[in-house]
Image (cartoon, rainbow, N blue to C red; front, side, top):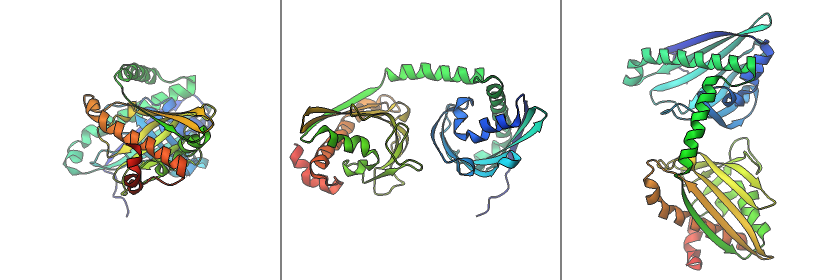
Amino acid sequence: MERKEPNLQASYEIEIDAPIETVWNALAVDYGGIGKWASGVNHVVEFSGEGGDAKRFCSISAAGFNDTRERVIKWEPENYYFEYELYEGLPGFVRYSINKDKLTPKGDKTIWTSYNDMRVGGFMGLTMKWMMRKQLTKVLQNKAEELKHFVETGEPHPRKVEIMGKKVSKDTKMRKKIAVVEVEQKIDTPVERVWEIIGEGFADVADSNPNCPYSEWSSGHNEPKVGAMRIMYMTNNREKKYFVDKIAKYDPENHHITIEIVDKKGFGNLNIDYSWVNMDATKISNNKTLLKIRFNYLTRPRFFKSLAKAPMRKAFQRYAHGIDYHAKTGEKVTEQKWKKIRHLYK
């Protein structure tokens, strides 16, 4: 279906004291590197593809704004021009949002012109158009100033430094309020077998977790390593409830893995910015392993974390039992299988 014409547009132009190839590399070729210099982006959670196939998932720094998924839809390096659209994370009244970036040489310098085409609808969108145009122009201006500073000096703009400093301070305070759920399970198999499940089998978590009917690698990922991502579908309806997890630490020698939650759907109270899982498999003897799972989490509102502790402990204990059963039998631990074997773990 063809898009209707944009009813909200903004643009901004700036001169950058650097050759056009240098600016193009920072802005377009390094599409996944926007978190290095743009104050509106904390960091890029996920990046895949290159050129016209590039996609990124951005953690947004502005309070009240959703994280966004963005993809390149037009790629013309010979003209120093590309377009990308925000296809997830937009407010409900925004029908679409497309950024268009054009570089033009000016001697040894570069002119960057950035445009945004947007279509809004509904009562809120139509009544807020004038204010949004002003705000959108300011966003483009800030972004232009920040890339200019980054390209010309090699350092992030002071605005970016200030925002990241505030984030570090906030993170330090929030981490002191984190709640913890810990479970342990002794498993009568070698430690290497347990590591096959929790480490090497990172994307196959559904084989051992009765809470998860299906799991798979996230797009562009296919092997366990730092930065690798998976999707855990928590119901048979894959669009209803899911987690997107990323490996933050991967230590096969010591059989340790740290997993961060980078996206979710259907778990509104869980604050994924401050939630992660540590898993360790420790050799007890040649055929016995101690599995430890530690879930660190916060909720919104924070007082809900105490109410969530019991059901979370139950869910992770079931997962530990599932790992035990799968390690010993090789059988997939589905919800139906769990109902048949749970008496073994009372």
